[in-house]
Length: 491
Figure 1 (tube, rainbow, N blue to C red):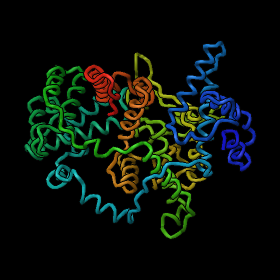
Figure 2: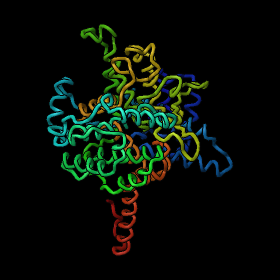
Figure 3: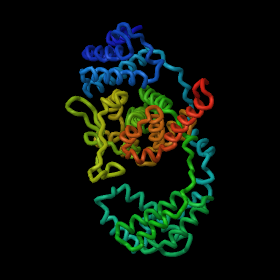
Figure 4: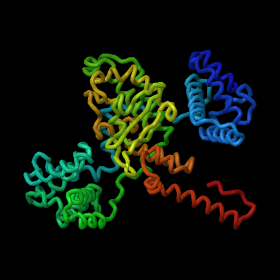
């Protein structure tokens, strides 16, 4: 089968709308020429045997060649061409017209309750998170002494325009651990001044590290860093000494080795598609939840598939996925294109280079694979979720509320772990996405844009990839120098 035949077959099957046939033919004509064929009728269908970047690279080179000849191809034409081609290949795969690689089958675990019991018993970090380390020692915020309550209230009031309420909650949780240490371990009633006492803070870091069998912990260090930040914000004289103290501690040992949890983007997409398929299965009415909200359980499964698909296409922080609000962060423009839009305090860094930070992306152009499942979710599944008729949040819990960080992590992590046997956490998707992208393209700037980070941060976080690249070049150099005429190193 040739490229022209493929498009005609898909239109005849009504898998693609006839109204866009002209656009599809224009796009396939560009691709055929880019691959060295006269037209789509003579271009064989072997695209699935080539990496996605192969035909994209050829297409981009073709556009540049046309531009060099004086025929400029606009950005919108380039984007629409790539979008149309991806759509053709995706639909052709769904129709069984293209051969696809055999995927490793997903696991078929028992019920979620049974799986959880095994999952917890076999956890690799039980020595850190169980036993004495699970003993509660924190002091709940409602039990903070009056001086601490007053100081914290003043701090919140001064920073309320810069820090989100949910971030204050995180800071308060860390402070509760330190205050609980003073109250329950040291036997001392905490005061607001104790929150900036370098000697007591250092003792807490040492105690918490010893308690966990390590020199220092992330919690211990974050408490000191938080104290330094609060002292600076309040203009206290202890600010500089606390900042120096925070820098004096060694970096906490890594608890979760990312290489032990990593999965490929392709494997994660397989999990997402499986969850989508489970959501499409007709629902029954054999549970109380289903009786109250018919179809909600299946809708919840489909929702998880949409969440994961969205993160694979747009690797923003899990917080942003949780907090998407319809007609604000996710909206459709006059051309029918869906957009994601986060601004200011909706992002981890509210201001950048003296301006409000903005993360905005046209999903139809740059995440076309997401659009069909997103629209299916909005039309058929989200209305079955509790609270869908009143809440503006795109994704909802079974109680009709926005997902908390813990609830979101558990939903995604458990879905992936149950289907792959890998212990996973949603934030790791950003690492997998960036690593894969940089290794294939060498483009740190593109990775930074998609992650919503600066290039400097991406270079710092993924420096190991750059090191490997230079090591590869060095190995090729020494091989060619010392062993001329031999085959180039293959890795």
